[in-house]
Length: 346
Ligand SMILES: Cc1cc2nc3c(=O)[nH]c(=O)nc-3n(C[C@H](O)[C@H](O)[C@H](O)COP(=O)(O)OP(=O)(O)OC[C@H]3O[C@@H](n4cnc5c(N)ncnc54)[C@H](O)[C@@H]3O)c2cc1C
Ligand code: SF4
Image (cartoon, rainbow, N blue to C red):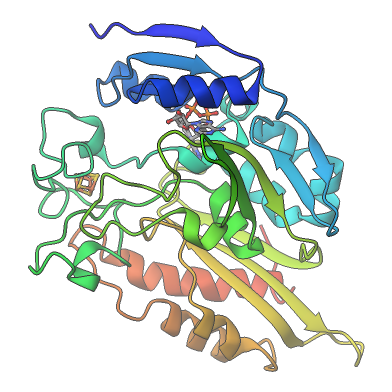
């Protein structure tokens, strides 16, 4: 049994101060991931700082025409917010593709970004896991790795000087795949003040330090997620492929946001493209070259497949998950077709 203390505060500065004064404390928001990890003894905080009463529960306009999602807005409230539905339907769709209604009613937007991998070995403290216990090894590489990464795993950068990867875990969030495509920003506050992190820099690849999931400092609090003005409300799609039709994490997911030239009345030339993949890497995966390749081109399966090949360049399977490479390519082609309204979304 791990004992811990529990405190609750309704002031942002006090929460940040409390966290900084006790390095082994943790913030708790909806608790849908942290409590599970504590039950399995993966996380053992000495204190829980309940942040659910901080004034970060609203969705408001930003001065540059975007939308600010308070870190403590519930996932369900974000998905059903009228502004989000009208201006950022891709985000609404990705949130509703995740978890269950009950979980979305508890889970917060800030917590969603910080949820940890669903790698089975990470949750099983009887097995070696470099993410949980650096240096102990990775049970997934030669184990059952159906849900694991095919892109950006440690051997791709070989920073450890060996061919043995440190970690092949994926980031499990659906919401984050849309936030990557929309190029959101994460606003955070720590003892040294506030800063803003581009979404592409928020999550990181495992490299030599797979125990570190993101670039948030341990004593920083996420205060909001800011969406830019451009929301791609007309041409978008989120395709999530999983082992069960609901209540399951993605094996592969694709968020697509397009703009199309409608001047000829047909809207078949792509003028802007964003493609983000989930379930394939330690962070939502984007490749600017694959998006640029589509700009100025007609929306055809051949062009979509060329973009898919670029996005998956360098992908590596580990046995049980090798099927994901072709699956991801096909999913990209289908999602692009759905976003361009060439095929139905169902
Ligand atoms: C059975 C099940 C199925 C699920 N299926 C899916 C799915 O299909 N797709 C999907 O995307 N997700 C899924 N989830 C994950 C769920 O979305 C996350 O657990 C949830 O979003 C986490 O939010 P929370 O507020 O509950 O975070 P918590 O559990 O409270 O916290 C998670 C982490 O974030 C930290 N934290 C929280 N808020 C802040 C903040 N503002 N600043 C700094 N640190 C903070 C905490 O200290 C903790 O480390 C599932 C979860 C479960 C249990
Ligand atoms: S893939 Fe990462 S999280 Fe899973 S066992 Fe290996 S080191 Fe741990």
